[in-house]
Amino acid sequence: MTTGAGERLVDGYALVVFDLDGVIYLIDRPVPGAVEAVGRLHAEGRSVAYATNNASRRSSEVADLLTGMGVPARPEEVLTSAAAAAELLRDQLPAGAAVLVVGTEALRAELRAVGLTPVSRADESPVAVVQGFGPQVCWADLAEASVAVRGGATWVATNTDPALPSDRGPLPGNGALVAVLRTALRRDPDVVVGKPEPALFTTAARRAGEGRTLLVGDRLDTDIEGARRAGLDSLLVLTGVSDAAELLAAPPHRRPTYVSMDLAGLFDPAAVVRVPGPADAGGWSVAARDDALELAGSGRPLDALAALCATAWSTRLPARIRPGSAEAEKALAELGLSA
Image 1 (spheres, one colour):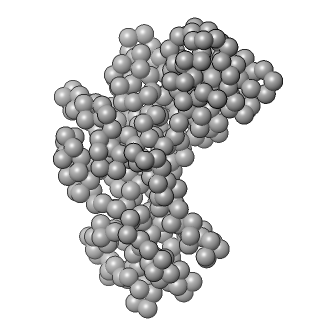
Image 2 (cartoon, rainbow, N blue to C red; image 1 turned 90 degrees about the horizontal axis):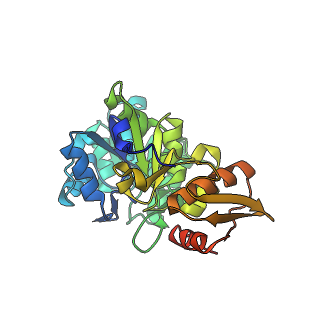
Image 3 (tube, rainbow, N blue to C red; image 1 turned 90 degrees about the vertical axis):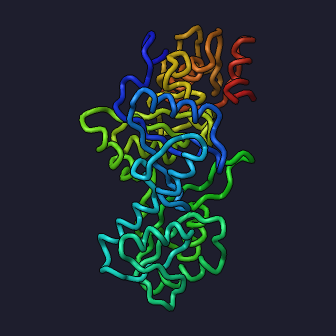
């Protein structure tokens, strides 16, 4: 099942909010088709925004990066967890308060922009620690943060993404670094700002006014869960971290509204599917047999995925799948679900 015969998904929404890593780009290169998709939205006069948990760049730097990739973007269209964390601390701390930074210069700049003083050592009397991703973060940075938090500083994490997508596969993200401190301190951060917390998305959605907002993301545990918490529809694209197998095993609070292989699903009704779909539609049938799902029939791979979601989510069986036809074997291979 698609969104409706001949209906484009994008036509039902006033604003499209994109996650960045895994949706628009991978590290520093655009995802195939992303430049064209966003360009088409701009050409049609549609509102777009970008929400990212990556705290290693400022909004202006992200906008410059996107523009350099061929995706025109303005700083006010970009919502980062670094800026959100700085604003949260601004509202809680006195002007000029010292904040120990674990992360990049971009995070420091966001703190300065709201009138706070970034520091690097626990002996500089920080009243808070803000921890964001940075490729140069090392043991010494984490040690200073540990001392500061043990001394009473508030611990704020910009996000807890365990991994970052890359063309070499997932790499350690800020969540992995937060886990180091969590282990050492035997406690969780006082506040986590980024997705799946809904703040980034609700801030973006306010720009849509009375219109509906669609979130496009590649991660079930941050993008999709965050959209659900914010009460927004979501499109999962299979160009980043989460794959079809993870989708089939997703708990209710991490299930998207739609799925597509890539951003073509925004415009092509045949390239997107609503999930779950009927277990016997689109030429496919799915049956639970011997603690596994059996896919039979023929049709579009995406329809097969929607049918598999229907059965997997209703039976709560392990996502073990076997083909019941040659066409099913091909579809499962295309979806990355072959045994």
